[in-house]
Length: 113
Length: 111
Image 1 (cartoon, rainbow over the protein chains, first blue to last red):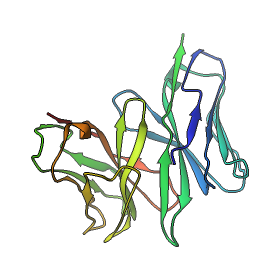
Image 2: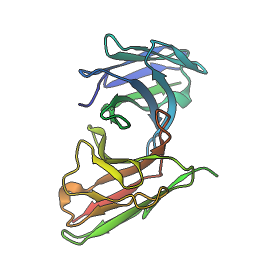
Image 3: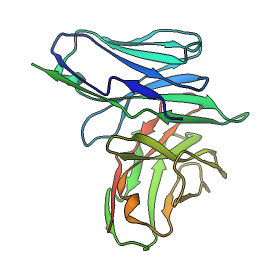
Image 4: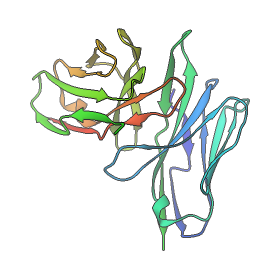
């Protein structure tokens, strides 16, 4: 039930763009995106709810296509601080009031000078 | 300061010796969960709780127990730890359908 992320790893030069994809075989209610620096806890970036709304956070944005059960994270004009591992989390309802959040295996992003 | 705390941060123990990792949040969140993180496997959910006295299994619950007697606390219990439970553990909390706030992590080694 883990969503599948691609690519597994990417190396960029500062200023370049990247796209990280997240797909699920199950119907999705929402998608979360987090970034984790080495040795630290994951930190929230954004959440996308059903409706295909694209959200933005500085130069990082994301889209959610619930029909295709996919989400993509877009990093534009990457900065050194963008380095880390990116996780998508897919949320699906499991009861009237409950939901489960499953994370992908992560995409390792390295931005070099 | 809004935060999720976990204790201990580091723990080395021996096979079979019961242990508890505590998790506490001060944000009045209904939803709490435990994850383990292993290289190449990402974050895998162990257990989650929608509210007090409401808990359910995640993807990898074998060998773990949880309880939610108070809204702020969600301890993770390993009744008889084994070496394959050596991992980095994160507790998280959130409001329904909102971002998860993660604790700092507990690195557990079972020898």
